[in-house]
Image (cartoon, rainbow, N blue to C red; front, side):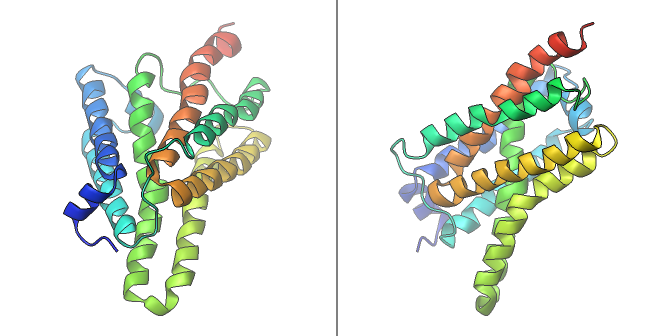
Length: 235
């Protein structure tokens, strides 16, 4: 088992790449703040996002180290395995929720506006993976290290939390903003989304899970996020 940061950095190709993704998320946030963007405030209610983003991506990298050292996630391989599935499913999965949007499921202000979205959503993808997937799994792995008899149960609890936290929060946030039928669909849709992401994470490593989320965000938040304002709300 890998035991030191130096060994992790040397033996796992995904270590520097995940570190680079974390740094890129912070850099994107700094750029948006410097440009006077209100993307974080309009979407997440964060008037001063830099410190929270730095804290979360730091947690994401630290949690990844815990999972890697405990062998809870595999080393990402150099080949294309998993990337094609991550991209294709990520591009296709937003299509049904776009249909819900066309039926009046959501209001106009759910996405960050262009061109800020081009920096905002890649940074938020790293934040989301850190909070919703890495953090609960790393917490479970840490507890399992100290309570070895409950290792299997804690691993299962971590997996359940990683799948369920994001849809629960989204349903709570959308309770007053969307019709009940649309909000119920969001819950089911995001359960499927997070289940796929966690499977990719556990089978192929963090990079495939991140690519899956980025592909989904590209269609739903960036492409459709721009088009929906013209098609659904311009009149």
